[in-house]
Length: 146
Ligand code: 8DG
Ligand code: MG
Ligand code: MG
Image (tube, rainbow, N blue to C red):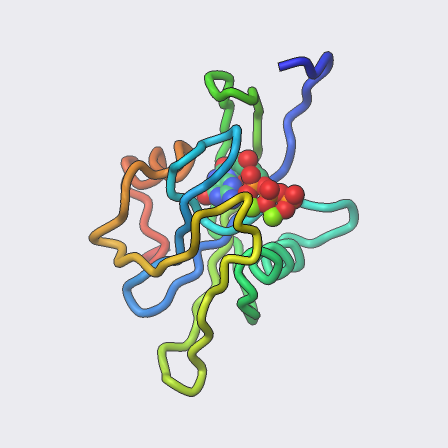
């Protein structure tokens, strides 16, 4: 791709947990197209990780998350993608209520970027997962026990 001086960027993504499930959507993107990924996006100037997590989840799914907490960070160099990129990815966690009165249904608010959001049981994840997530899962990372 034509970017003359590419730089690493910071992304914040969220493990939204409900019971034994996590929210994933299949990407429509030049990076990780058709793979299942967490909600999230680019850290904006002046934002905290928590603010970015809540904003991206709201923009992409309509869900209002409460507190989120930092889990881990990974370095993702993706030069094989149609759009070459390099992300330092911050992984946050937020737990949503399972009670009927707290139940919020995710909406696909950016259908040009995602095929739709679904809850997937951690023991039955869909595939292919987006590369950065796939590497964590293969490495034994578990957002429920971190
Ligand atoms: P924005 O304009 O809303 O800020 O960006 P976006 O359109 O929501 O960006 P994104 O591609 O969803 O997320 C930015 C980058 O974050 C993505 O290109 C690569 C990195 N990233 C990971 N893992 C994950 C993940 O599981 N989900 C998402 N959405 N992005 C991830 O490294
Ligand atoms: Mg976004
Ligand atoms: Mg996004």
